[in-house]
Amino acid sequence: MTRGALVVALLAVAVAALGLAAAGDGDGDARAASVTWATPPRLVTPSALPSDAVLYGEVRNDGLRAVTLGSAAVRVLDARGRRLPAVARFLQAYAPGAAGRTVTLAPGRTAPLTVAWHGPGARRIVLGPLTLAVPH
Amino acid sequence: MPWARLATAGVATAAMLASAPAPALARAVPAIRTAGPAVLACRPDSAARIRRSWAGRGPRTTATRRALLALLATCRHARLQAAVDAAGPGTRVLVAPGVYREAVRIRGRRRQLEGLGRRARDVVVRGDRRADDVIRAEHADGLVIANLTAEQAAASDVHVVRTDGFRAHRIVVRWSQHDGVRTDDADHGLLDRVEAYGNGAAGLHAGPGAEGRCSGGSGLEVRAANAYGNVLGLWAAAGDAIWVHGSRFADNATGAVSEPVGPATPHGCSRWEHDSIAANNADLFAGAAACRAEPFARRRPGLVCPRVATPVGTGLLLRGVNGARVRANAIYGNWRAGVRLAWLPAAARGQRAATRQYDTSNANRFEGNRLGVHLDGARDANGTDLVWDGEGAGNCWSANGGASGATPTSDPATLPSCPRGSLFGMGDATAQALEVPCAAWDPQRAPDPPGCDWLAAPAPPP
Image (cartoon, rainbow over all chains, first blue to last red; front, side, top):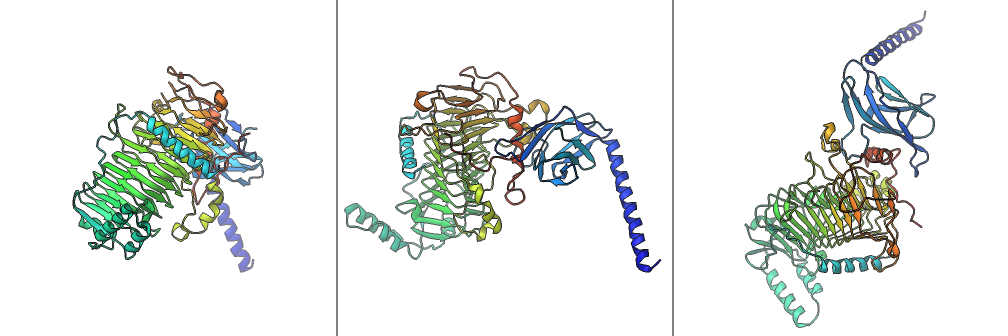
């Protein structure tokens, strides 16, 4: 094995190890805190913005421990895993300022969640280690 | 809308004001003093400006010119701040015509800052676009600011803070990054004949602090204001005790917004009477790219860069307000909505208790307004005259007139009538959710958030 090949091999092992570690953390989080839609969410298209979508509903922590969710970490992904431009707030109506940017959910508790995105084909909403399905 | 028509609206509104009943308000608002000790501030060209303003040989013009020039001979202060500092309680600071390029701080009781020009525009206090406030009055009970112009503040042109008893009379505030006039923790105030334009947030911003009782006698009064070309003509965070009357809010992105802040449940008392709220469709968000290119200090004066998101095309927006009275106003030509009542969850005020979330948007009354009709009688439709998201109890609408005497258009199609009003409802969840994305608006990081349809004026209604 050449010196260069050895370096590449070591890097590959390191990356794989990091990946496993990250996946393990995520699985652990997911087991401990599982957030789901408490009721079926509603998907609407603003009449003036036909390329945009707004999804709103209530999420519930079905896990075993409290979880803190931040709207800045919310990602909306299409079927190929590409990220769509999106915003989110833990609100069911407009509120100015910092309201609805984060929420801490104790086990069994619910909170409103509204997510909006631009573009077609949204499939999943990712909140850190957690994933919510986008209904169609 | 032609300016001539807007001007006509202003005159007609003033006429309406003359016939309006006058509840006892502003008990502790100071009077404008016309005598007593005074300190004078002047600029090198003040004499020339006086001669230009009072040119002519008429006896009154000549007498005024001579009196002012004689007064000018006593001037010892070329800086306005120096004159303010030299003035004790009860002393008037008289400001000769000229441009004062400085920021002024006023502290202490019974200060009066008064321009000596023929018009408010003859005395200009100009910020350097870096100082937050151009005129900042703090702990200045009994303050009077009259007959001058303040402009180009990085925050507010005139900012009244922690002051009980104040009056702004016949002033012009323009081209600030945020607000023209702003009050915070200030009570017993009168904003009288304030002209506000070209401000990136509100022409007039009534912050929290006016705590008046519903029976009158205190609070904040806005009278005969003329706000145009701002993002918000008026922004009332002091939802408890503000009386806005005889004023004109036209050609802003949104005419006026009442949106109480602070942890307490708003008690109610706001009054909107005999105002003209017209043609608030200014597409100020369309030019935001130019705003992001340069910081405020380097932008050209007059470029309005929004600092707050708002539904463009709305006349009067009441969000999270209790006990408001909206009466005998002329509201027309607003392409999204004439008057809109909407829920504001208590969480927005930092209240998390589930039982409190619906503690606002209750007991508001809308009566005797003329909607979709210009003051000259011509039809000038709002997108929808009256809009309500359905949240709250005791809200009612009665005796409002639409074009040609027709019933105003509304969403929902039928609105509860006064005095009983609505039974409690949580409102239209979809309509409420559709506004949430606009909470993510930010002038730099999120100038066009997905799902937010506020930022452009709708097409004119047919």
